[in-house]
Image 1 (cartoon, rainbow, N blue to C red):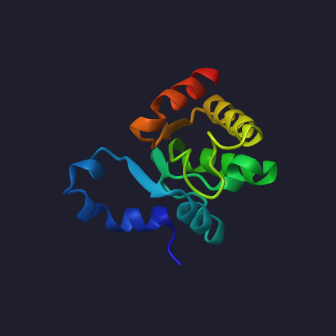
Image 2 (cartoon, one colour):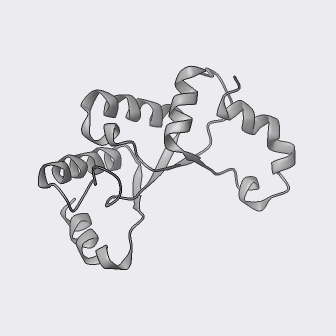
Length: 137
């Protein structure tokens, strides 16, 4: 199994024709990259460009062991942003359960301390709530 870095390196000549790739920036589905990296690590790979991840696994927010593994992975993979839909899913990160919201707030602070920005996918109906949450972080 090829690792994401190896796949991107192999495709670099073809991808070079596209401006978004020539700026050397990548967006990955978070769990796919996490699982592929764990299944086939690539020590010494040259692909350590800044990455943005699409979505957060709930375990990374709510489970301290999984969260530590995520932050180790993010440091190794040079992750600088994560897009999250904080109101979506079976266990929304904000707006449903105050205890879960506190855990998410702690996750956001921990991510920020590591240089990782959390970007929200939210609609206009939740804007005021989201803004107040962000201010509380």
